[in-house]
Length: 316
Image 1 (cartoon, rainbow, N blue to C red):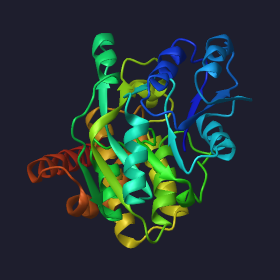
Image 2 (cartoon, rainbow, N blue to C red):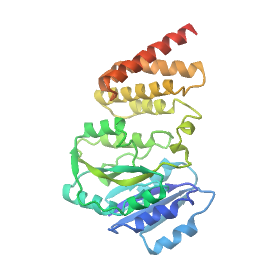
Image 3 (cartoon, helix red, strand yellow):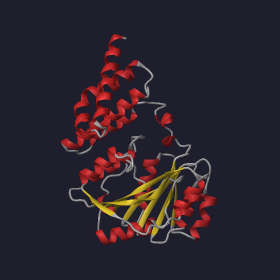
Image 4 (cartoon, rainbow, N blue to C red):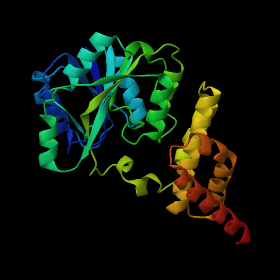
């Protein structure tokens, strides 16, 4: 059985659409764990009709955040495979069938799928019912998978397009961070597993709906309170996780990429924040050149921009 955990806070506007995409599944060998994270607007009346249609557990908690809600879901799940879904997203009707078939054939520990990003209602509806005649899977080395999670925009450092065998989930979500908690969870469990088999599915089975109102889908809101939260979370991963030298260097490269983006987009409000960005780049620039995924000409361009900004900050 596959356990799919759906945390939500005031998701009344989206929850029926999400649940309907699971009702449409061609395989019913799954359970849904709906974790109400202290919503102020109830969705129970919309959920209750689906108890007759689907294997659902509805759990109400105090408002402690998405990481806490996901941890509650993991503890109350019974499936051998665990996946996650955001309440304002939908999935393809063959998702469960494809995941369970690949898991049965390969006995793998983790499966990740392609992602369809859309906001058009008609296209989203077509996606849900699309049938794939051929599914190509590719076995991935652990290091390659972690590289893709960090640097490949088509893979995403999120958990919602990934399915974990229960036996490899040794660590819970970190409830003390609010940004990159998915990436922390993935790295924490993957790097701690010595032998792991990972498969990538070449088709999109998860639909990320990008017209959302939540802060995780608005870059300006993400940076509203603290424009360095991404970097802080990555630094925390370096300090707290059992990473090897190469994994740390790749995180350093990612820190530089984010710091450069912050500089270019002016995601800083005072000189202290600017200096912190420049310091992060200075300390990790070598790893950026070695492991960063930008083309060489972009690396040269960004490095020159960094040097210019650094000199300007001294003059000013």
